[in-house]
Length: 73
Image (cartoon, rainbow, N blue to C red; front, side):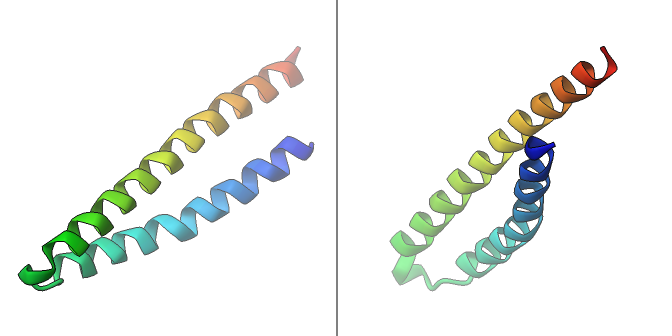
């Protein structure tokens, strides 16, 4: 049951963080051209973080599947 609670917490974190990342990317687009490097750095950071969350989501899906499979057996 502990893994299930951790899964819920990670999914909650993901649901709060990903929308904030989208907002960050929207603001990054508005950075003036003379600060292009800052914009590029922000976009790269946000994309890496989003990718990490998607990787965690995949891992959680596999963990949930295995938990349900074990419960059924």
